[in-house]
Amino acid sequence: MTGRLKIVFVAAWILLLLNDALRINELSGSVLAAESKAEMLGKMALRENERVNSRYKAMEHINQALKLEPKNPQLMFVKASILRQSEEDAEAMTYIREAIRLNPRVGAYWDLQSQLLRYNGRFEESLKSANQAVKLVPQDYSFLVSKARILIKLKRYKEAEAIADKLVAKAPDFDMYRDIRISAMVPQGKWNRVIEDVSAFLNVNQYNKASCFDRLQIRADAYMHTKQYQKAVGDCQAAHKLFPDQRDPLRRLVKVYTLMGDGKRAQATLKALNELDEELSPPK
Image (cartoon, rainbow, N blue to C red; front, side):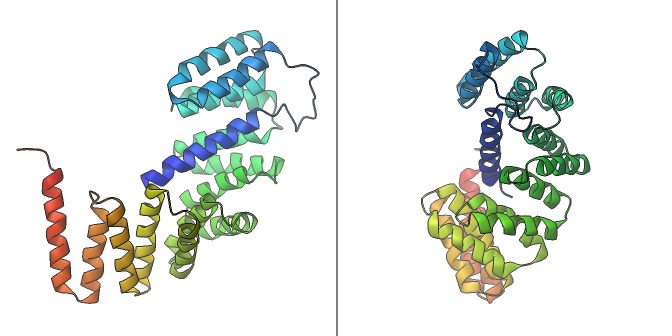
């Protein structure tokens, strides 16, 4: 997965988790007659956390909330989410573990713990937490997304693909699901299906330059593997047109021209790539 896609995925996952935090212990069946001051502060923290430059306010609100209700697992979950977004994973883990200890019946808590473990390379432990989240709330597709990503890290591609198939069937226009499936299919060499998924995305998402740039290159690779060289050339050129200062499309063009036996174009593209490297290199 490219860096641009990771940013999109992490942001989408955080929003899904924060939305879960707004639910008041649905799984435990408790209904509060009135919202406490601590819970109001928790919601204020969530709103501030969505603004990049207001995270200090978010932490201030959630700390105030926890002073009022230090054993409220939902507030601990909110603080752990804020800490995760600030990449303070060790402290986030402390809060989410305590939230789970106090109320182990909330799937979002287990899912956040799973994410923290995955970010720290503890994939087997992460999968156990993901399984618990899915068991508690099987209808929450964000938990299935988390599980699929862990399975990809564990190189259990067929299982991840099966989950992605289910997700795409439910929401065929949601590109996150197709991206997960692509990540599971590329290592298996399922190039024709990769082409189908990338093409489906590009048909409905033509205005996000960064996303199109990444996916055009993925499809170009798939076209090369299936010896559809002219289509690979088209995707590389389209990606280069979107971001002319990026090297990867030109590198792919050199490769595909070489595979086509077109040495003249390969050399011309290599020259353009070398000139680009010179332009971007620091002054001597």
